[in-house]
Image (cartoon, rainbow, N blue to C red; front, side, top):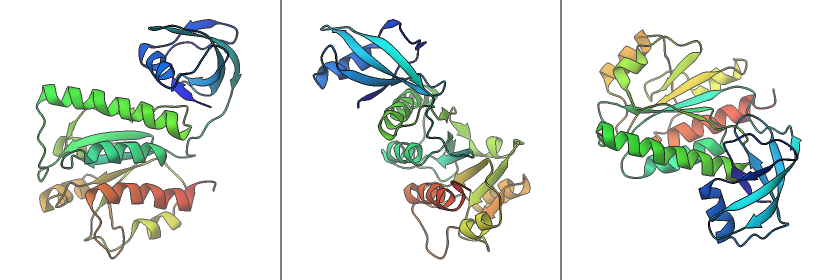
Length: 241
């Protein structure tokens, strides 16, 4: 059943006009009045809705019963990802959402090749938000991950947080998997460097601010692989515990 994000009240029995992007998608896939779709607004659960009218530029649907279904992990993992080259960030965000990330923090680190002006950063954030929505629609999540503004690594890593921060580094003596086996499921932030990794100074500063240095094992992973492997590792060890 097609799923769409609809950021408005979804009250059983009401007839609502769907957002323009959703209406366009419905027209592209040639859905018709009477077809049933799933809608969610990010506040939890989902609803089934029956299409009432499908016009050239607008679609209306009647909201049916609310279903309190969730697909969130029982712990919150935030992926703090230093900006990679080209379109890798798009792929990282999409797959991180599929793997259950509760938050995404884009980081500007010393070795980042990509440098974004404030205007370009705003456009990228809007683009990445769209990826979060699309990935959530596809993978069955009813809550949207939080996307933070682009952060300078040094100022961001010095901030105090209510949950643990992990910085992935090949210089660590303990692996993420070994650490997680001895920890209860909990909210954490996983920090991943760009191509070339975090600089030695950045790593030292993060550790001094309380981050835990962990590795992903004996092999060096690419920036677009490391964070997703970390999410999958935590899911395998913690999900359902």
